[in-house]
Amino acid sequence: MEQIQDTSRPPLEYVKGIPLIKYFAEVVGPLQSLQPRPDDLLIITYPKSGTTWVSEVLDMIYQGGDLEKCQRAPMFIRVPFLEFKGPGCPSGLEVLKDTPAPRLLKTHLPLALIPQALLDQKVKVIYVARNAKDVAVSYYHFYRMVQLNPDPGTWDSFLEKFMAGEVSYGSWYQHVREWWELRHTHPILYLFYEDMKEDPKREIRKILEFLGRSLPEETVDHIVRHTSFKEMKNNRMANHSTVPTEIMDHSISPFMRKGVTGDWKTMFTVAQNERFDADYAEKMAGCSLEFRSEL
Ligand code: A3P
Image (cartoon, rainbow, N blue to C red; front, side, top):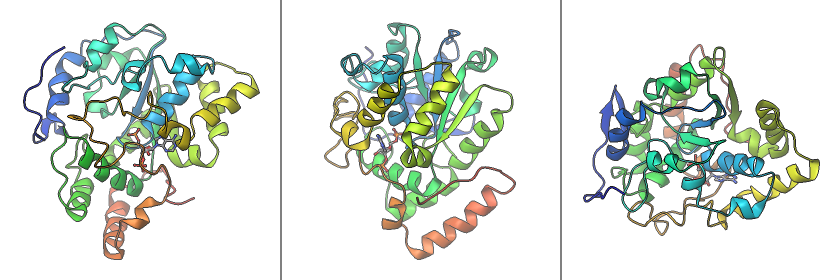
């Protein structure tokens, strides 16, 4: 495993105009030689949109609902995070070498940085999107606890950076839009965090249909129960508590934080909300995507 010496919140590095965590930026080049398998499944999200949740759901589906099998390793081993690199953990590419097929792969990369072979070979994608306000709040707390990110500064300044796309992985607006448009030409199941909150069983059924798999009714119910926020918060193999503190400091803010829709209301001031809405209307003009920011 490659040793990383300086872990002191380095500034983001731009790759093709996209700001990334410095260590992740270094992986984008080598990642382009990734060789997909026809049975790969790619989980794509903008950060803080329900990646870990859908990953657990998918691993449970792949393991036929067998809890013990899903306890075999932490999430970052079960579902390799393609562009990941950090101290004290194997990189995503290292994990990938030992991952048996059929593989579940995770990335937050925008379209411009996705390995071309994944697009050319039409690897199936499950995309999860979450409303921008809850993402911004969740991302702020995540920035505080993840030591590979730059310092988030105040909530107000972080929100400005989020709106300007000056956070790791760039613009939320562009990310959700480009993958939404791509669904016309690429096999993408586009899911929403809020729909999963509202009716997880319905969304798991959509996933099964997309994968061309079926499971007994009781297994689906079992997956719904096991992947609830409460269960996952206490599951060491899903809650990222095994990630070294140099990367994630759960004492600052736990990874499994609140898991609700509408938490933004506890952070946004009236003025921030008005400014955000006006900016949102401009950035999302002409897009048919509709988000719910409360349930
Ligand atoms: P909050 O910070 O709002 O609580 P990601 O995995 O993409 O980084 O997303 C993390 C967000 O999803 C966090 O949001 C986390 O609490 C939430 N989350 C994780 N598992 C969840 C679950 N089973 N149900 C609902 N939300 C979940």
